[in-house]
Length: 108
Image 1: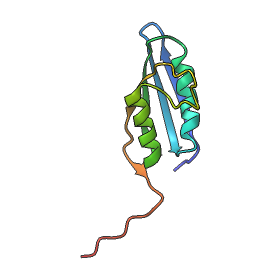
Image 2 (image 1 turned 135 degrees about the vertical axis):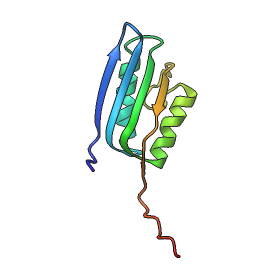
Image 3 (image 1 turned 90 degrees about the horizontal axis):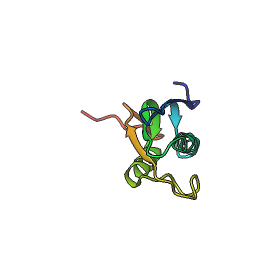
């Protein structure tokens, strides 16, 4: 697994849509870099429908909760966007989550 965060942005201004695709490992620290990219994409046009595809990323549970909070509140964290511009973001959930603790084997 590549732990380096790779972010691609696809924008369709005619239809007011943007897709941010993240691959790699998303942690509570690297999620801030993702927020910055989302903020820049969101600033391109009012009412932009923004989708965040993290389906091919390893996402720590706490980082996933942070992303879902931004989706539910329609705002990015205040330290990233002090003006709290509306941000309609939909998170396309990952297929798997990375956790630092290994699960204990189940005894028969």
